[in-house]
Amino acid sequence: MQLIIVVIIGTILGFSYGSYTDGFIFNTNICLFAGITLIMPSLFKFELKDVKLIWLHKSVFFKGFLVNYLALPIIAVAIGYLTQDFGISAGLFLLSVLSGGGMVMHWIKKSGGDTSFGFLLLFINLLAISLSLLMLHIFAMYFAPHFGITYESSISISRFTNAVIELLIVIPFIASRVVIYIKPLVGFIQTYRKYISHMSIFIILFYLFGLQSSQLLVEVYDFEPELFAVALIAVFTFYLLTFLLSKWVYNFDSPQERAAFWHSITRYITLGLVISTFSSATFGVSMLLPIMFAYVVQIPLSVYINKKYMSN
Image (cartoon, rainbow, N blue to C red; front, side, top):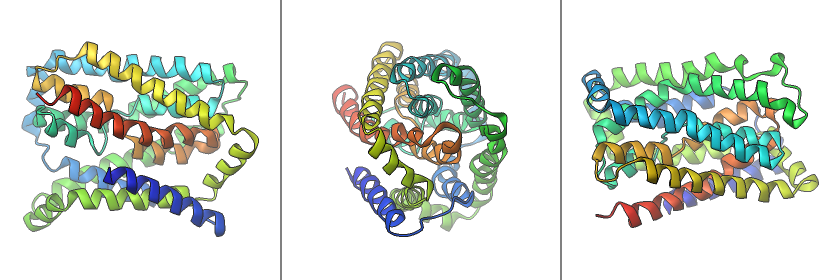
């Protein structure tokens, strides 16, 4: 509930700020901020020796990889095609290839999943951001013509791929390896991690929705208000199908499969918002809509699943 309140307040205040001022101009430093405050703390407990868990639970890892990088993108493409909007379709596809997120370890721990295996999956999925961006690029090349859109290489997402990988993967990982030797700092971050995470999400949302480009959502609402409903229905359908597929694929009696389950149910929404802001000029501002509504759907769904299916 606290996170939902943070998301709502951050979004409304950011959008209001942009409406009554000239708004912010996008700067890649927001990616570095997200990497240090949201991603770096998640890497503190990652140890190289945990890599052996991939081999020990290779069937679970392989199963999760197929779900997250094959099945879910196919579902997203099918739903996105039905929306008949390139931006919404791209936003949904981006969600489908961003596994895990800031809340995934919370749900793994709360539901009795294997946290060591969960941290390893989180680290691997962070490394897979480059794969996710490549898949989004391929999606755009092959599906843009179906929406009557020309995907030009000069404005493609490849222009910022290196920056995203550097700011969201390389620097946070190096920083985590340095910070773990500063025990008081690690202790402080771990103790107040929840508050640091919420404050970070608030700042990121305030900044991203205060951008000049985000104000274009007003034009979307003025000229195509139906896209808001279309995006909400598309996101709800995507999460519903994701849950039904994951419930069928994973065995809840296994701690490792519970960890893998949460990495399929939970999408890295805040990271998706950062990347979609980067690429809204390419896909259209409506790309932001599925990311926005993902907050509304994913958090209550996770609470419901944990109470109903993970309480034993």
